[in-house]
Length: 172
Image (tube, rainbow, N blue to C red; front, top):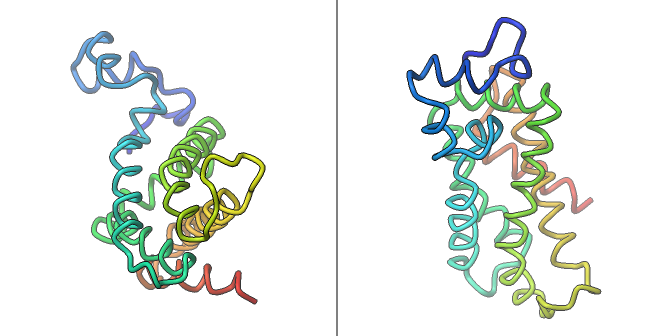
């Protein structure tokens, strides 16, 4: 990830367009913002997570099913670690990207809520029942913790094992 010498915040859309040799209108045809260009594939990831969770066995505890449903996402980091580490560091040091990451988690939660609700016997349309949302939010917090540990330490095991450790810690 190359940014302006002053960092991500100082990198303008115009600078990105110049580096990519595209027009501003072309940039905005594909992305709504600079943050969106960095944190792409929200809809694709939402579908991936939803499908992965739906494919888990019904008898599997929801917490275990969520951990396994997150694995296709973290496999992407493990497959090509350097860009993943750079992206995680950039998100950690850039408030705007951290906020955009939070928005992405909200969309993932919306995608996962019906299946988590079904698995715990909750009504997904009942906005007074926080169980599904809390469960998903906790799993995503464990994902963030696992990625953070993985990104800041060169010699770490695969993210899947760090995620398992993080999620197991919530059972204490």
